[in-house]
Length: 361
Image (cartoon, rainbow, N blue to C red; front, side, top):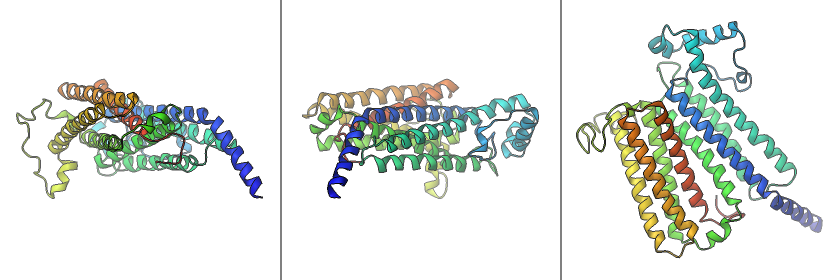
């Protein structure tokens, strides 16, 4: 019995090792799809399309309106929303279709990502191509995707009662959690990369801590950017480096209680987003400088330098977007580059861990 169990375990592990490349490529495909999902979500936000569909139908909602009566019914539901009454009253059916398709495409892509994740997962699992250490992590990733759908509706629901847009709190959570899904899929894909095993063997512990600090600051900056987007804070103080003529603007803590300022005060929200960028760049420079003098591999040193350049370019794009008063394509590019910067930080941090083992996250 023990011999049979051992044999089955050996066969499963051997099959999983042979299928490692396929699993890794599948995870990279998920990363690309989630990246597209984040970009489409950004376009939906920038076009104020997120409240055009006022119901959440996970299954039936995949079918868009197919007839004139279907469109009339969908438009009638939207006319009951506060956004229509206070912002878009009198819009034509054609104008409604423009915002409807953005939101429908965003939701459809979310369903498609779930399909592309679940079907190959079942296949890889059934054919024993998933290593034992990876299985619970993929289950967690799948659960994160389902939870993200619920967060998305929770966000939309905030704009269907008394508001004309969604809550900036919920928008920031939705964006950050999406980036969490993308980052974890990328992390697991990197853990399956054969090239990173030797790199991790020469990784200094202090460098690993700094790399994780950069990832954490990257997530924080994306969350702060979500608050800026939710409050349309980028449409004010369109100068740099000064805000309203001052390096530190007045009115940062004018709301009560004090903690509300960090989430609802437009001045504070934009100022902290700027400060978050400065802090992220400073830590990246510190990490790069420390790695230069370490015994780390060339790949880790290159990753530290790449982080500095990526963050610097992103900061320059953010400043340009602000000075131009947030034009659509600049704002979307700023969001795209923010996610790419986070991805580069995740890849860099993953290289500090041995690949193909249960050690680590």
